[in-house]
Image (tube, rainbow, N blue to C red; front, side):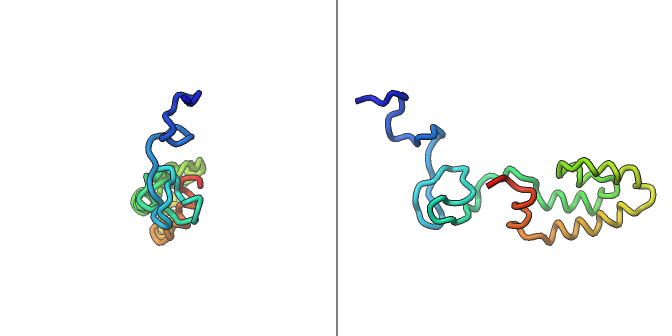
Length: 117
C-alpha cells in the first residue's frame, strides 16, 4: 500500500529532511528543535536565530552613544540615544548596558533576545 502523501514512510511526518539524535536521551528529534520534547535537554550546537550578545555588547560599548545596539536588537527607542548623543548620557548608559549584555548568561539572553522555544 502506497501512502497518499507520496512519502516513503521513512521520512518524518512534518516533511523536513532527516532527523538528528537528542544529546540527552538519544531519541530522534527535528534538527531545529532547541530542546528535546522527550527529555527536555537543551540542544546546543543548533543554529541560532536570535541576536548575538557579543555583537550587541560591543556595539553598546563602542557605538552605544548613537543607539546602534538598540537598533540591532530591534528596539525603536534607540532613536532617543540619537537625539541625546551630544550630552554623553547615552554613551555612559550604553557602556553599562554593554557590560550587562556581555555578563548575561546564555540562557537568559536566549530567553529575552533569542529564538522562540
